[in-house]
Image 1 (cartoon, protein in one colour):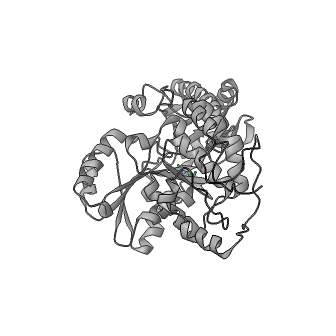
Image 2 (cartoon, protein in one colour; image 1 turned 90 degrees about the horizontal axis):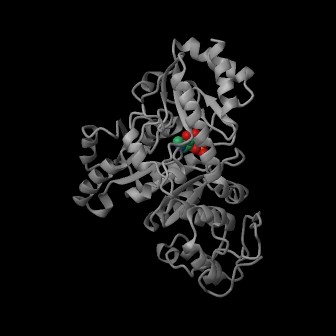
Image 3 (cartoon, protein in one colour; image 1 turned 120 degrees about the horizontal axis):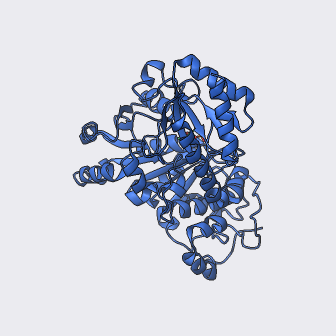
Amino acid sequence: MSQKKKSKPANKHLSSAYDRSTSRSKMVHGTPVTNAWEFSKHLIPPITSNTTFRLGSLDRGAKGFLQFGSEELSRDPSHEPILIYDRLDEPNTLLLEEHLAQLEGSESAVTFGSGMGAISSSLLSVMKSGQRVIAHRNLYGCTYSLLADWLPRFGIQSTFIDVNSREHRQLLHDPNVRVLYFECVSNPSLDLADLPAIMSEVKKINKTRSESDRIITIVDNTFATPWGLRPIEWGIDIVIHSLTKNIGGFGTEMGGAAMSKKTFERGLKLARKDFGAILNPKSAWGITVHGIPTLALRFEKQQTNAMAVARFLERHPKVEKVTYPGLKSYSHAKLAKRVLRTPEGKFAPGTMISFTVKGNLEKCRRFVDHIAKNSYSITLAVSLGLTKTLIEVPGYMTHAAIPKDKQSESGIDPRLIRLSLGIEDSKDLIADLDAAFRAL
Ligand SMILES: Cc1ncc(COP(=O)(O)O)c(C=O)c1O
C-alpha cells in the first residue's frame, strides 16, 4: 500500500455519485476513495498499524513538515498530504475525519483520543491567558472540572450561566469573553440550548468585534449526535463529539472529534500534535467501519425505546419527574421540535432520559441497586449511546467532579437517575424497571 503518485481529485465518478446520495447512504459508504491514502481497492479499509512513514528524500520530509496543518492546502481537493508520523496525521484517522465532516456537514473534522481530548484541545487552540469562557451551568463533570479547576491555572476563568436566559447572556458583552461553551442537549439534565436565539445574539455582538476578538462558539453535540442535530447549520464554530458514545456505538472504542470551518483546523491539529491527544488508528478504523455506518439504525431503535420507556416512567406513580425531549411535558418541547431533526427532517428527541424516583436519596439508591443486582437488560455503568442500556446516578458518578455544593447550581439533583437507551426490546427494559419499582 502506498500513497498515490499523481495529483488528481478523488475518483470523479464516485464524487458525483456521492453528491446524489442521501445522508443514510453517505453514512454507510463514507469516502471510499480519498487523496490521503490508497484505500480504493478495499471494500473495508485495512487498519494502518504503523507509527512512522518512509519519506524518500530530505526535501520530501521537509516539505511534509512545512505543509502540515496548512489551511490553503487542506482546501485543495487534489492535495495529497505527506504523512510523516502518526501524532501529526494518519491514514485511518484521515479517512474517519472525512467521513465525520460529511456526517456533521462541516468543512473539517479533527479527531482526538477521547471526547475530553477534543474539548481541551479546542479550548486551548483558540484561547489565551486573560480571556474568559462563558459556559452553560449544566455540563459533563470532566468538562466542568476542566473549566473550573484546570484552565484557571493558565489564567483562563469561566463563568457558568443559564445559556437560555437572555439576562445571563448579557455577560457575553464583556470584551474578554472569547468562548461561549455549552452542550446542545446537556448532560445530565437534558437542557436544550436555544441555538436560534443564542446565535442571533452572538452574531450581533461579533459584528462589533474584530476577527481576533470575536466570540467563538464551541458546543458539545454528543447527546444529540449528528443524526439528531447539526449545530454548524445554526452557525456554531466548533462542534465536539465524544466518539466513545453514539458515534462509536458499541462500547469498544474511545475517541473524540472537533468539527469546524477550515480556519480552525490548523489550531486544532497543532494542539493535537503538541498536547498529544491523538486517536488510535485501530479505534479510528472501528468507528469508520462499524460505528458511523450503523449510527442511524441504532439511533432510531434506541430512540423508539427511549420514547416507550419515558412514557412508562411518566405514568408510573413512584416517579417524581421525567425529562425526555420527546415528551409533551418537556420544558423545551417546541424548541426541540424545531432543532432536533434528522438530516431527513424527522423529529429526533434522542436516546437519553433523566428521572427522579419519589422519596429521598435512599429510595434512589435502593432502586438503582436493585437494577444493578437483578436486571438483565439494564446495566449500572457510566458512558452512554451504546447498544446496551445503561443506568447511572450522575451526582455520584459521571458528575462527581462537581463539588456537592455546586451541583444544585449546575442543575443536578443528587437523586437524578440517567438512562442511556440501547437497542434491546423495550418490553424487557420496562419489565426490569418495573421490577425495581416493585422492590421499593
Ligand atoms: C456530553 C459529554 N461530552 C464529553 C464527554 C467526554 O468524552 P470521553 O469520555 O470520550 O472523553 C462525555 C463523557 O461522558 C460526555 O458525556
